[in-house]
Length: 627
Ligand code: ADP
Ligand code: MG
Image (spheres, rainbow, N blue to C red):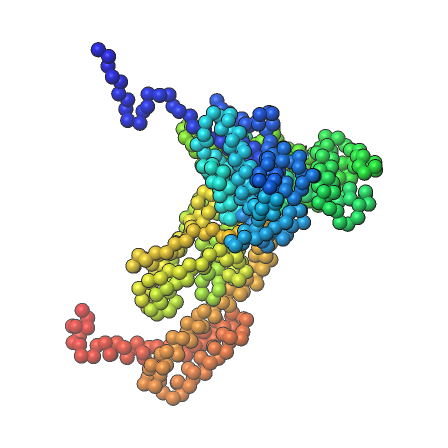
């Protein structure tokens, strides 16, 4: 008799089914898709065997005509409908577009939600739609090669991407029908690709500090990672999402324009042609010492040294950002153990040399700098989807700007400090300012300055239904939670009643990196002024509270408990306090007067206390009173 086989619940008799997981590097210039096969990462090429997919989408009146290399061919002939470098616009608002406008030749319109769209023959398209076309193309390529639907993808983003830019990336993936397992910072992905997490160290500290320098076509990222017992921690990130190889191309194109006497204004077509020549010249100069050009019947020679004069300033900007990140991470260049180069532009010998000089190290570049990010993403996707149960990967990223809340006097109270590793959840308790206050307005701000007006407002919401209580006795717990993708959730809860209110912060558009840099610089250069202003605001809040309390007390008990001269004396000190509160900018002077008022009103306070005890005791026996 045949025995029926019964398997244990959860233990299928079929061999373990691998899931289709990929890593996608959605680049400004080029995008790639990779997967893990037999334990190692491989790039999935297109049918012609090409790894890269240029991040270019061409539109015709019926819709998208092509994506990638084919689309890039329309660059010169149909520039307004050939969309490239769209990652620069992802999650950006109208104001950001203005500052980027010069480098992008498109016409923009703004929809009702404030999202800028690009006008094409097909109509207005959003940066999210364009990005989703690129993602769809890569997912299609992967499904064809893997022979099945995708179970999920890890998509990489620049470390400096803010909330809105990350959200926009996710939206683009959703639009393309891709399940996002996680967004991963590009430099972090590169470190994973190098397997630095699995390395054994022979020294005692068991720690390595790694700088990941990523210079692509449109973005620059620097990350300082610390590796300790197989765990990555991102100590600091910095960079500029509007700086990359494209800017080198622009610098060289400008030189060409001058040499060729082409005048100040070029049409879109001429500009594209110059940029293409500039780009190929630049790339050739990574191998050769000089390039000869025949263009518009003119013969030109560009040497490496000459090109360096055009681009050294731009390289210098990346080094400045590196130094700032090292300062943030509180480390010196000589304590960096390893430097990893990422991004096509690090193929330029000049870039590698400058980076090497800054860190005093020979940078790591054994994995192709174009492919390394996608490979790291694939490795992580494989783990997240459950294919690799032996790997335990703990990855921590950091938030670029502090997240705080507005408190009395227009001051910022930081709840999560910048460069805190994410995911993170922090809570802080606040209280009411007025007696019987039943609602509280929560204002979420981002930035490192002391005054709310110098920070960026992210969201406002109200907590209602607080039971009426004496000022200062309600306990309102405000919690900030930043998930692994860098998205912020804020909730407020009154602890005695349990009333709660929450909000997911999705700003309609994000800050540009230049703004982030500016905000940080401001916070450093204004630190002393800010502290002074903060102290002043605190004293002002204190003065207001004192004025309000004492005036109410005088109204109630002044006549009965104080004689004429005492009352007058108190009035005068109060008037002086009010006068200073409104006019002085010296917090010490205001604090001194607060103390004077405190002293002058001490006796009055004592008498009021006595009076209220007497009143409470009136008619009660001593036993009752002590109960
Ligand atoms: P992104 O991450 O922005 O998509 P990539 O990492 O693919 O960009 O890098 C693209 C940039 O690298 C382009 O500006 C390209 O010109 C530049 N690049 C690629 N190869 C070379 C090379 N050999 N020399 C100099 N620059 C290069
Ligand atoms: Mg890149």
